[in-house]
Amino acid sequence: MGKLVQLSSVHHSKDTRIFYKICKSLVNHGFEVDLIIQHHKSEKKNGINIVALPIATRKLDRLTKIIPRIIYKSFQYDKGTIFHFHDPELIPVGLLLKMFGYKVIYDVHEDVPKTILEKEWIPFFLRKTISLLVGFIEKIGNRAFDATIVVTNSIRNRFSHQTILIQNYPIVKPENKSLEVEKRQREDVFYVGSISFVRGIREIVKAIELLNRDRSIQLVLAGTFINSEVEKQVKSMEGWKYVKFLGHIDREELKRIAESCLAGLVIFHPIPNHIEAQPNKIFEYMGYELPVIGSNFKLWEEIVVQNDCGILVNPLDPNEIAKAVERIYNDPIEGDRMGKRGKNAVLRKYIWENEEKKLIQLYNQLLID
Image 1 (cartoon, rainbow, N blue to C red):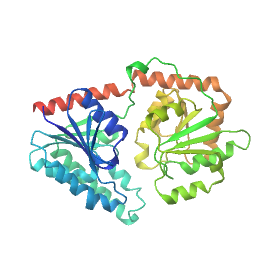
Image 2: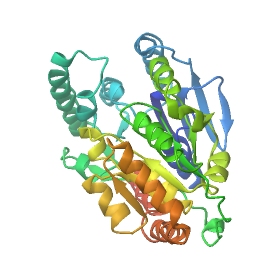
Image 3: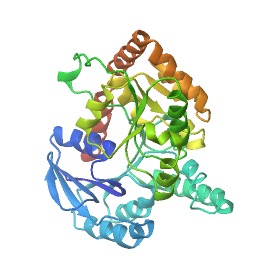
Image 4: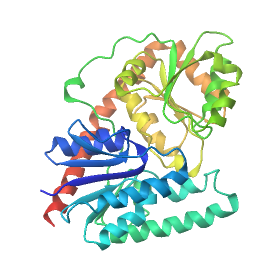
């Protein structure tokens, strides 16, 4: 059996999709997996061989330090290796590996051309041109690579060759499926993930400020700020005094906190890439029996509204966000019912086990071909 190698120049070593879903699923099915990724040292964790890359502190470091090392390390493997990469900036590396006879999978985590249209560090007048160029390069890769994995149907519609939908559904361990969530304190709302303006942090903090005029509700905030300027501005807001900031937390801490909160927040701005996304945190909140308060995107209605497991709001309106929190705060019985309906929906249809089967089937097919 050939070795399977996961490549990333951008993500951290404990990325949920790469480490906990892709790598662990492969290891659990008997495959030998190397993960070449930014990490403090090379080591073996949970059966996964982490091959450490330097930690990048600037975008330029990825171009000058990370990608050259990925290329060098990749060519140390024999021709029976399957490479599975997770960042669009590695498409040239993937094409190079294909030229030398390796099998290559491209895992598309987001609609990259749409994300480029919103990148503030790219001059506005260049964004459309770069977006079109990247979309063109992705389609070249799609034709050249042995498979392209996508996370949503809208992304799949952009590709034509050997494209497999493997969605970002949560991992639900069999022994935990029937366990009841402990009774919540029902005093806090929760957000976990990357902290940025386009992910609604200003609107969330303002909503918490509005809520605390009449009652005491705390925002438990976990994750990392996208940059120091965002952190500085948010911490200067009046509502920050009602925020409990935890920084980065592990999955056990995430579970403990989520199960003690009133609701989970996913207040993304209505930019092109967000509207067609299915954030993993929606499903994780549902799995923890947390009512979801999210942005009123049509795709999210199919998850939250149709399963009656939360409330969708205008993500640009702090008053509407505050009213949604207040509604659940004032009706804890319905909040509990929303949470239970969300968890039941996860167990019925939004579960990683179903996606894992498609992943293993793909690898088995590639190893035979």
